[in-house]
Image (cartoon, rainbow over all chains, first blue to last red; front, side):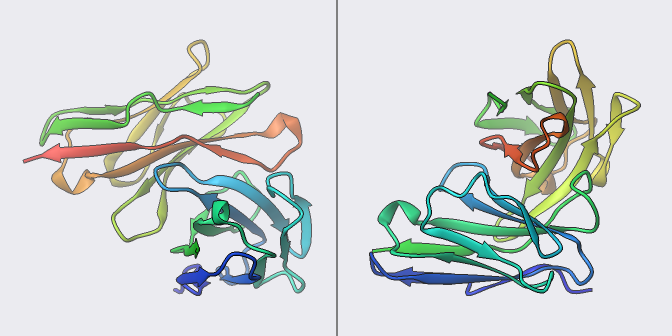
Length: 114
Length: 115
């Protein structure tokens, strides 16, 4: 079956631009995570959704970062007024039930801010 | 503060030899522990997890890991390495008792299996 998909795969933004990154989780998966992965580092937690409810946004680095999942399926991570330090790979993962279950990761969106 | 450490950036092992990739953690409360693998140009894939029960857990592709509470470790092992096991391995922990949904990943260990 289809896995987690993310779009775009690559995004180049000029500093100060807004970007929107999309995640299509596996159909029926309740849990959805966003991570930021800098070069040579492990994924860093950004936020967690259970269906449409954003239960944990403690990892969002600033108020320029905003995520939503309005209908409990597709999710969008928005970054306003991008900065160079936002350059990273943004990973989305979904999980069938609660967070003790394994996560299925998408291929990521590589964001480069110039 | 919760943390995960993977002390080795890279591990080299000869094909057919046993391999170990180390992971230690620091959380308050009971940890839920995971291993993920990242092959080149592919997304992270789940290997195995420890939630509760038997300290030795078996996972995909012949991998296993041992939970050691006294040493706060969760090392990944395989009895006989394959060249195709060469990849980047990440250990992760979720501290359930804190009531957060945060996962903490290590910085990764690159495994190179030499033919």
